[in-house]
Image 1 (tube, rainbow, N blue to C red):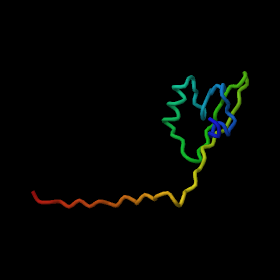
Image 2: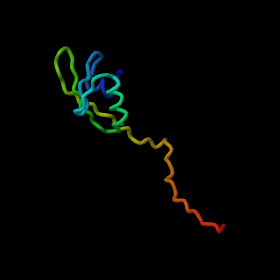
Image 3: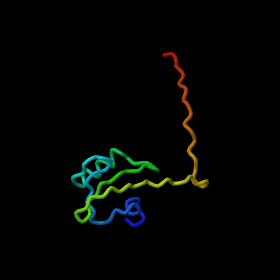
Image 4: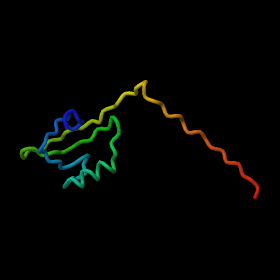
Length: 88
């Protein structure tokens, strides 16, 4: 997708992903399973080994850090709950 982390790193349509962070990727299921287990977070960098036109390349994909917006509602910290024992 245009302006995605992969696009910004230079990955193009038709590139074949061989590895992500040293883990072999054989098909799209491997790709999605890896990302589901890894769950990249803001600022993470993943190293992709790709094949394009018979040439292997290493591409680093950085997940963007989204700055805090002052308009965003802040979550209240969960307060400790006290449970009182009642006689039976």
